[in-house]
Image (cartoon, rainbow, N blue to C red):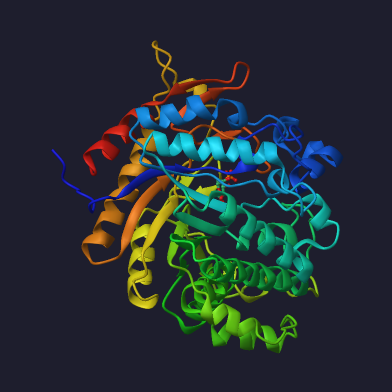
Length: 459
Ligand code: BGP
């Protein structure tokens, strides 16, 4: 019996990214990206010193893996293209990469798994990082060339594209914290990186339309709803600022075509506004997305700034403090709060404040360490915690849809265990387990459960 039925043609699937799954990092002409390089110079930063060279070997095993998608009734899959594989020097097309992505796309279509192809998932080619990465407007141009090349090569079969996955993450992790290369902590530079990423997205959308491609193009944002500790004026203000920095900085320009005034004023007050060129804001205004992908993992709880600011440097944290909600439930392995209702709040926010644009859950998932503890006699991982996680999020999502939010799909993170940015294979997320010694895949109980949900279009 299906109690929570989802709309017709709802997408049930999973997301992935090139660096986290493909492997073959130095094979068949692929150039280095920042992850390959960072691992080379600082392997100790990565869990158990496992780097991005092999990961889940999707480059070689994609045909079997796509069959496995069909087995569990996925009707869609969102991988990314590796920029440094497709255009190793930024200009010339690598034919081996074309062959790989062509076969991957064809295989997906043959198995009735709709490809949603993402262009950028944290993987700046090293030679572009060397000239400043997103700080350099030349890289915005280079990205546009890459996007046009991908549309030209694959646009006849791919009907849903996304420009970026979580563009705030490289800003936050790489320019406000030491968690992603280039490990800079500088708000002024972070703002430039964010602004240029936004321009790159708008420019690629512009090209997509100029090229008269007959599909749709969007962006994937990680939305972390900000919840204030209390209704006090100060807590509300703190939570509003967190929302401006971490959500609205990309959400507003991507969907509405404009930056929030409060954000611009705040940046101006601290002399943090980036240099604009003529036409920039018009480009952003004219090239909003057709649809939105939303990655949801955790909320952000905020209170007014109570701890003294230790450094002179301006950082987002100067404007609010994190708040530990006494009732919170944590995923202890990842250190993220689990708050299922957040997905409903996002659904309603999109409906009420973002023109009820078509959107889908592009990632939602739970990473757990040491999952082999849960292997049963027949060799299956009994990950009931993950089933609970998905079920509760889906119920809240269903409520949002019932109330009119225009959500067209739900993708889990992720299809099979994969390599994570610093944690490597510490926390596992897959519907399929991967034995790293043999690269063997085996279905987890959550995979079996998800296949029924996908088949019944509900739970
Ligand atoms: C998202 C990223 C994914 C993935 C996921 C899980 O932010 O888009 O690439 O990694 O988070 O996070 P992690 O791998 O850090 O546990």
